[in-house]
Image (cartoon, rainbow, N blue to C red):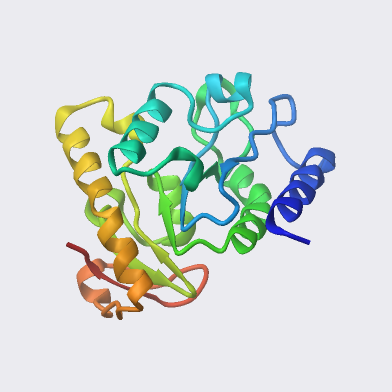
Length: 212
């Protein structure tokens, strides 16, 4: 079974899983290239995403997609999804219980996609991979977590709220091509846990360093 078929099978499992929370909202599974090299993972869908059943289509999504295009990439060549795949009421943050319920499906989605780099957007997504990390300190750093490389970024919604955050978001985005090349070459990622302040990870011990 190819990746597209596996993803569709996973999506249908989620549709029929009555144990998942937030079923009053639409399922926003994700979209993009099943053979992507880069996977963007946000926190949860908002109003616009729930309405269109697509991830990152509101103002924050437009910023994300514009930055993807500014790299000379096509939106269709990456994959975009969220940890929690239904909208929490009033666009609130996803709860730990909601994240826990959706976590197995995200893990399977990542396994199917098998990207070279995962880009968590915002602290909830980052802490899924790096529980001890802090977004303001560790965004823009390239981590190795098990078989995956992780490059956390500020959430584009946060970037819309201030010029300094927008600058950091844009600067980190520009690191992506070089990070992808580094990963493709198989360059090692040094262990600097004392610098990162990261002591454990849900997958394996975290290895990382400041990138760029």
